[in-house]
Image (tube, rainbow, N blue to C red):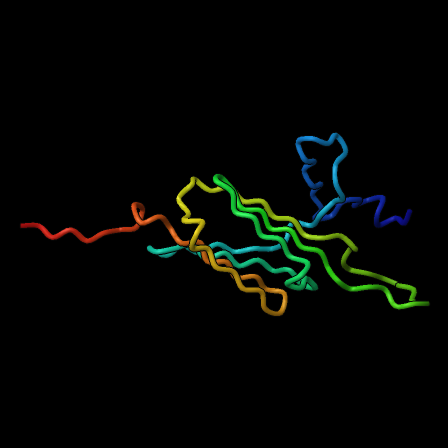
Length: 134
C-alpha cells in the first residue's frame, strides 16, 4: 500500500448499494460529475462519463429515481505497467431522486464522447399554463 492510498483510501468513491436479495455489496463505483438544468418543459441532465461506451451504459428510470451506471471499456495492453494512474479501474454510478414529476415514457438520452445528455420531460399537469382572464 502506498502512502497516498493510506492517506486517502477512497477518494471520490462511493460503494454501490447491494441489491435487496443479496447481503454482499457490489464493486465500488465513482460518482460522476453532473449538471441539472430546468426549463418550463423539462429537466436536462448532463453526466460526464469518460471512457464509457453506449454498450456499457445502463440508464434506469423508476417511479422515484434515476439510476445511471456505466463501466469503462479500456483494457490494459499486454506487458504494460503503470507508473501513475489518476483514475481507478472502477465504473460509474449515479442515483438521483425526483418527486415523480417526470414523464418516463418521453425520456430521451444521447451519449457522445463520454458526455450523456438526458432530457426528462415534465408531466403535462406540472407545466406552466397561460390562463386568459375574461
